[in-house]
Image 1 (cartoon, rainbow, N blue to C red):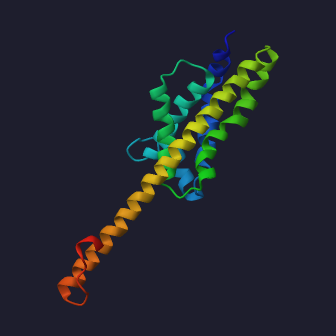
Image 2 (image 1 turned 180 degrees about the vertical axis):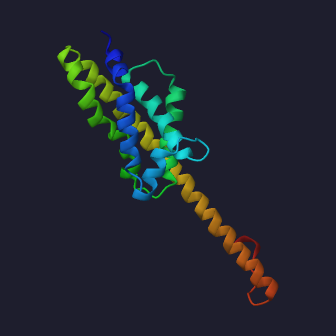
Length: 177
């Protein structure tokens, strides 16, 4: 039996547990909606989470996934959580929630079949995905921060222009706006 078959046999069960664990990281009032609404337009967060979880699970399992497809799945997880009010550790937690589920459903069967090394390789793939995800998270947070800075600069410039029109503020030099 190939190693991927161990993962494939419990795929749906593991994915359901993992997605529910991810949903549990959201506030209580949000969790019910994420679980119950299956409409991708009414509930895009849940839809993106399920889709990304499936791709990441397949990559961790050792199935032949294109690197661009895996990057896109990771990016969906990370970008979504980077714009939400999560600490970096909470944002990256989504990946680590998979490990205990794999250890419960996959590791015992693989260990019994003498394929523990293959299982540990899968966990190493997950660790690599986490590192890639952390780089993506950092970049997403930098973009969010720069957007906030630009917004504040624009608001300040608008206030200065308004004050100049009203006549209550001194004129600024060209380089000060």
